[in-house]
Amino acid sequence: MLPIPSEKPQFLLAAPSSGSGKTTLTLGLLRALARRGLVVQPFKCGPDYLDTHHHTQAAGRPSLNLDLFMASVGHAQATYAHYTAPADVAVVEGVMGLFDGADRMRGSAADVAEQLGIPVILVVDARAMAYSVAPLLFGFKNFYPGIRLVGAIFNFVNTATHYHFLREACEDVGVEPLGYLPNNQEFIIPSRHLGLSIDTAIQYEAIVEALADALPHTVDLDRLLAATRTAAPVAAPLLLPAPVGPAPRRRLAVARDAAFTFTYHQNLVALAALGEITYFSPLADAALPAGTDFLYLPGGYPELFAGALSANAPMRASIAAYCAGGGATYAECGGLMYLGQQLLDAQGQAFAMAGVLPCTTSMAPAQMTLGYRSVAYNGLTIKGHEFHYSSLTDHGLTPAPAAITNAKGAAVPVQLYRQGNVWASYVHLYWGENPAFAEQLLVLATPGAPP
Image (tube, rainbow, N blue to C red; front, side, top):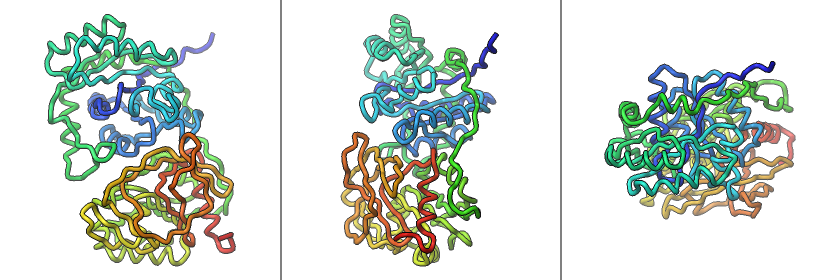
């Protein structure tokens, strides 16, 4: 007789559309469940690195991205299984609307739920809806048989009477009503660009605590956990290709502070396979970590901290000297902005940056560029995501011979630039499945490598 697989609560929180409040609800659930003494493992569908930042704070465990464009299905499944194994409950936050993918529903939250075999809870903005939610729920439940929609939680509900109508709609279409979140201004986290803001002035902890206080009164957490019990995935180690470069362990410096927060946790895990990571702050530290062999400047909000970054002249000089000396560097988006000559804020005020790259970036006027990217460079193809409001206004950057396309294979204007041993781009690359890209830069930066 085959053994009965163990079960644990696992679910994906999705919504009919963006703006339904699923991230706010996710944060409250993560904290409310953690308060029960449960080990709660958060995940995020798609390329978002803002929501994972908040998940981590709310749950006390690193949140992982599950993206079926940037990585393979096998990698997403292995990541989910590896991090879910020691947890009591796994919570996956969807992206955009439930079926919104890079190409129809490919890579959507529904796609992720199907590949992981976990049930879906629909988060519905009910502020202007009552029994009419019934056909909406019916459609989302029956549109695609590959997923299992088991329950609904309603957001922006005005009164208990309002919820009564919503509950009746659920019962009539066979979707379990699990509760609601009241329409309360204290629960609103301000947004910046396409995600929740990470502005340090906002009292996130107080908001998350308020959400966790309120949820048990209107959401049936016991039923949520019971209704989503699913066979636990078989735990497996994360398998990364063995490094092909020189055996000695490298010293890897990664910028991490309030100005540079846009990192994928899996990228850092993969990077650690190449050497020892030391985190440093371009805002607060005076110099790069001693003996740095590879510098990674991820994205973030350098425009919000332009004055402080500019004022830290010793760090700017340290990074400039490292790059001028041939130090291997990858700078993406906010990192590219920091390595430029100047950064112009939304008011047009100029701030001196590290002065490594011959470019100026500007937030004025703000122009959004957004989309998946596939980068083919030096025999390697790696996926990523471009998302920024700044632009290059004056530059003499030299493009590397890379072919960059969008999710449908069409060429896009964004470039991968190279100056000496510094590579920079607006694309946030995902190498969590394979650290070969970062390793390749280290190899290309060695003396005698091709220019």
